[in-house]
Length: 101
Image 1: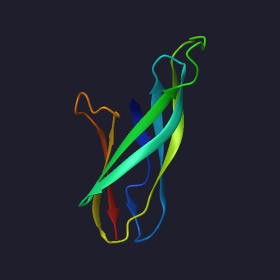
Image 2: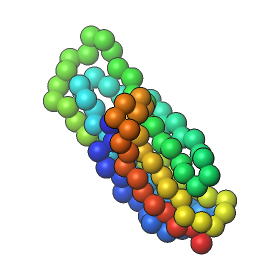
Image 3: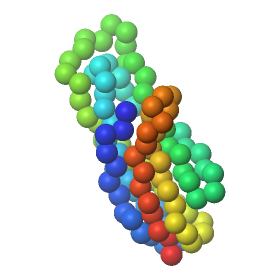
Image 4: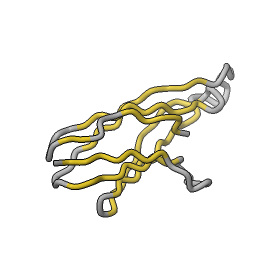
């Protein structure tokens, strides 16, 4: 589950922008696996996938983890980056708006 997103609000065409994502390691046995993103018009949907490190892992306190997400737009416009849970079960997202000039 995403806890927070921090990144730029403006950028230039074809400029790589880096967003810092904080996600919650629910039971402390998970590890980051990958981000999946898809685009629909100016909306970028980003989902985080984690896997259980080992079914015999010893559980510890849950922890927040940081990863980076890179975004590059080929055209000027307003883009909406929507960070969802992988299953999108509660239909909520953290939404960042980026203006590319």
